[in-house]
Length: 90
Image (tube, rainbow, N blue to C red; front, side, top):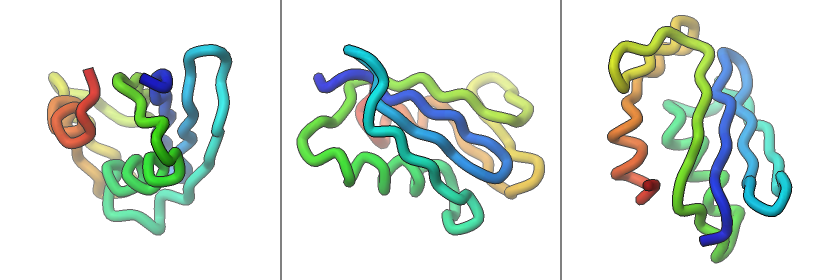
């Protein structure tokens, strides 16, 4: 495992990085260009080569109900379980 994915999914931008031995590979994405956070995460992970993280911590600037976040100004709705299954996070 190369570390952990850390992400801040905001209303305008998403900030993603790897954490473990420090914070590295920081990237910022304009959310308007993506259909949902899974597309942002996929693009980020594709830049890592073989450094796929085994776990993630994701902060969202939106209401959360159970494990589902609904972004009020983007029309994105997603669940932690879906992201965990899609990307193999623990």
